[in-house]
Length: 269
Image (cartoon, rainbow, N blue to C red; front, side, top):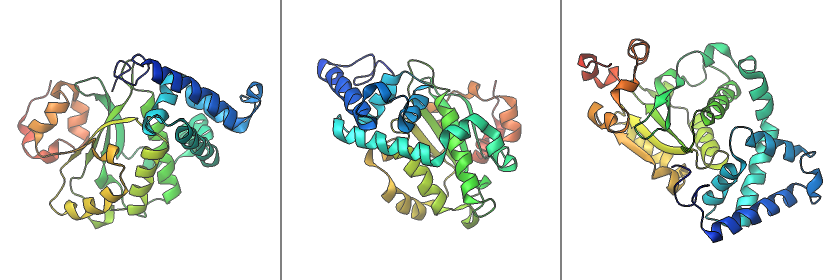
């Protein structure tokens, strides 16, 4: 979605503008009844750190839309987010970056950001084969994921407000299936990064993945589930992403297209 779509920052009707104003007032009051001291409070600092990467109204509108424009529900959701960011140490993670991570896991190539899709959304790639359950402490893996998601927010350029993720399920076996990690990823996406996902493309899914999918989809919000597409072949993938977006390093080092079998015969510019 973009800033120009209905319900987004550049296309609000009068009622939506009034709800946004009410949300600002209710949220600052929930953080601290004395509005002059909001910035000095712990959660106020978390809120303004959240604003650092984007227009504050764009940020707040994500939570309002996620809660169907119900101000009280949006305030509750944002307060949960701010408490989570504080307890989880997101600011420290962003300040220290790779120094907070297991560098071996971070540089493994199992997830990265590269290019944009056909409508300008930044694209993130996740190779499920690269995640081996128990290879690293789950806390370390979660830190990598949150930094990955935080950095992903920075790649969206106005007026684009969300991103596309490509999840490569090629060569996935039982050792790669980590329900604890998957549930953490879904929970973070739905509850702490609402409206950041524009499209999710699942590629190379084996026929056995249907059993796994039946478990995973129970954890998905219907709005999030509606953004997921299963891509069957290279032609379908290029409906969303122009082949010229892939460079030679991608072909040499990453597996996502190679596992479509025919892709090695294709020429990418």
